[in-house]
Figure 1: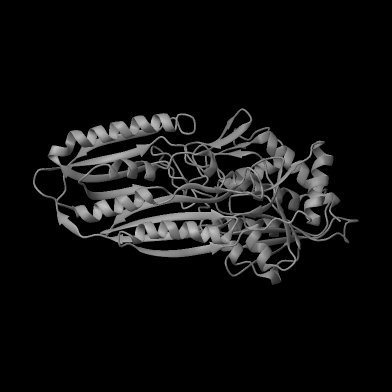
Figure 2: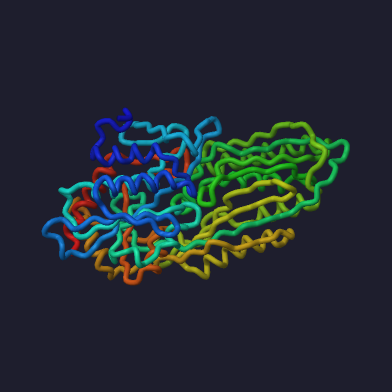
Length: 481
């Protein structure tokens, strides 16, 4: 057993989590996990089915005496966000996640942990394999590619699902029952540029931003963390004449970008002006983000001047569009105090084959507001002549405070912990809204253990919280009628 999990309770949950952590499972590469789940079902003589998009559904009969209880689904996703430090040589296609225990927290060495959503699968597998657990008919619904467009949830086929009560184990705050979530949409931008010869007397530089916390674009967007792409756009827009050479920033559409770099050429006479702009921007950022993101670094480095770059007008127009494009919280909910209603994440930028690519994601519990903020970003780039497309729209999950399942969960939580849970909605996108819309009559609640900084290399999960949530889940299953 990996020394990081030795002695952790519940032992079987962490053993399953360790096995899952050995399997490469970046979004779109879930075949290893799928085969692992099917082998698990066979080992424990459980029925399993794989649907047309690759989701796995595992069924377990009711415990003795619970045959007349309603069927309940435990739901989570197979894939994980794969992010690593610049120094890491980890290969997400082949290498296991290197687990590290620090006090009460489990994290990974130089990569994301995959607690989102590996811990849901580990808890579900423990219950599915435990003949002493008390429950009615049980299903495990394990979906694919949640992190890159909720592909598995969209592909759910109602004929494969027996349950009409679903416990989604993909939340990250103990003591909170989520009964609603935001809908989302992605904006893809393509901006083709004309490469021109860089004039004589120009110097080239690389400008990079790093040291930011990043994080989940739903769960952490309200924390006012810096966006590495927006920071560089802020500096570049102040430079009067520049020709863009390259750009690379961000990793995933649902991750706040924590690093970015641009290279560009400027007239030699502007060298000191460029240096001053970068220095002034860095000073301003250190003040503005002193609390929310204190380790921001801007680095300006001279590079060999190449032969060609994007022409100056297109470079200026594109940087201006990047600068004015929305990012962050756009509106707070007036229905549920303290919850973000609408937000944007300017997530990825790349330059290849004479074209800039920008990808952003937008969330809102109000679908008209979701579409409005997405189109505002789209119009920012249309103004420079870019091609803009809108993709991957998914619905919000409208809260139903009168839900019977919510009432069961609240009662069970209070019985198990002697504290009342918080019942609210979450700004992040959960699969519940989609599955509810595809399986008529489905009633869902989402909860989970304390996790922090998911979708970043700082991701960690509380060991003691996992033990409590695991115990609560078993207690809840025993009392649902």
